[in-house]
Structures are given as C-alpha cells and as structure tokens.
Image (cartoon, rainbow, N blue to C red; front, side, top):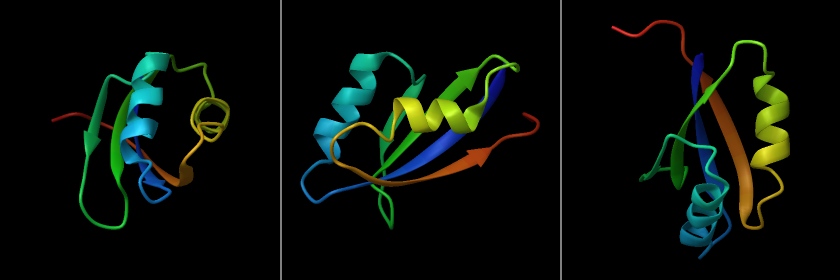
Length: 78
C-alpha cells in the first residue's frame, strides 16, 4: 500500500460539507480540519498499482466546494 496526504482548500463555508462528502465516499483513512492556507487534510492508502493522480482527480476534484488540492507523497514510516 502507498500512503499519501491531500491538503484541500474549500470554498468559503464549504469545509464541513466537503469533509462530509469525503467521509461518505469512505475513501480516506483520516480527515482533519486544519488551520492555514488549506482547510482539510486527508490521509489515503492505495494499492501500489493505482495511480494517485487519477484517484485524486476522480474522487476529490468533483466534490462541490473543493477549490484546490495539494498532494503530499510519503516514502517511509519511522
């Protein structure tokens, strides 16, 4: 499995609906509300054969209220 995080910037007032939509899809292992430039941080696991870019585009970018995302790849857990 490959682990990665997605920082999600939401339209004003849409943080909770976006978080709920992600939770309803049951695709994230964890979802956090965060401070700063982005509103949410979500943790995902995919099989090594799956493409992260396609996963993010197909599963997050179509959620109403998502303005922008930044994906952080992970390499090794300590």
